[in-house]
Image (cartoon, rainbow over all chains, first blue to last red; front, side, top):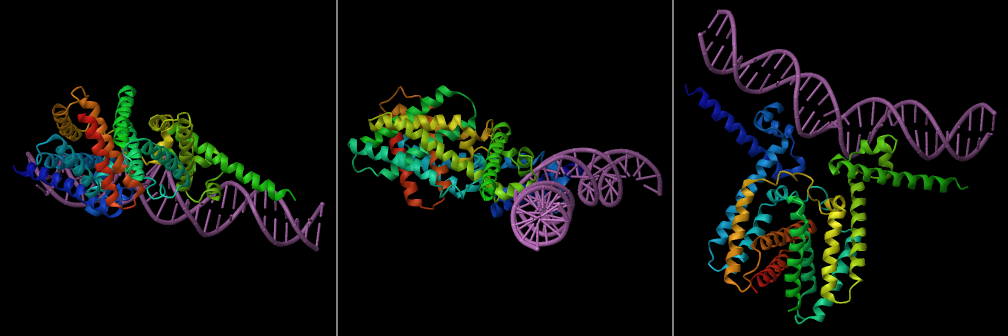
Length: 199
Length: 199
DNA sequence: TACTTTTGCTCACAGTGTTATTTTTTATTA
DNA sequence: TAATAAAAAATAACACTGTGAGCAAAAGTA
């Protein structure tokens, strides 16, 4: 009675095909272009068949999210175990993280729900420049007043903005409204930033 | 011949109504729920009328993006001018930024294309914990090896992750593939972080 | 071969952004 | 004021989307 096993196998096979074809669509046309109908066409089945394997479109995307985090964990681990010293480990991890984000940009995008909507338009918005200038002048002022006069203000601006956005994004995504620890994190990060900025 | 002026005025009026009603929909039901048809119903006109005022749905969203950055600039400025010292300015700016992000979460979300797709599901993914643990152990190791033994490793973990994600997100959104400065920013931020972690 | 189960398909519903066509309203001229 | 030209708005349609109900065909079982 290998008949059940065969069915199981076929089931898993089409499941994998769905995932593979979905990924191909995403890689070629982006997340917006991923649709059940397109998947169905790619696997050469009708649309309801897709629902036999995945409860919804979101379930498919969730699968990729898991894949992404799994892959990230792997990359970080590989980077980490090549160093003994903790600071070197952290730097290696940060580089591995960075590389993952851009080598697997499509994965990273769903993992953190990023850049789907208005990716091009953010560039070239006048109002953004105001924010930039505002931050920049304070940073330049801080550099002048400190002991690290060689610091690159534009570099520091990017760092400043990144830290802020990173905190906000992570906090919003984790969605556990624990305002206390969040603000603590903010001040902690700021302390480190300002210290590095002025000494 | 005030007839043209009146038309101009009416044009602007409905344009504002579109923006107002759109915003109400977004506030009440989120960005996903914003549709041209819903807007049309809200302003009590047919759908093509909306296209007389905005070229596309994206154009409407872009309007809110501009609004958002304008408002952010205002808030940051107000925070800044209340302090003379640069480090205090930066902290005030960071707090103002933080408050803006959460007091105007809907604005912030489109400004940085955040959280639209899979906001709830990110919580509770097993693979994510692996990444967490990996980073955490290195951070704990660094704290042990350093001089700042009282550092909160979980707090530092959040900071670490936030810095990384912030850098990536900002880099991806700005989309100017200037890999050199980006990596510089990364190392700069890491240097500051590690310094604060161990001293 | 006859029956049952499973599998996959067609069709439909309720949406979406966007646009061509037609109708209605408004303004201008005779 | 009535006829005509122009502008405005509505209807309807196109090409999509996710999702689900109901039916036909194939596969397995007796």
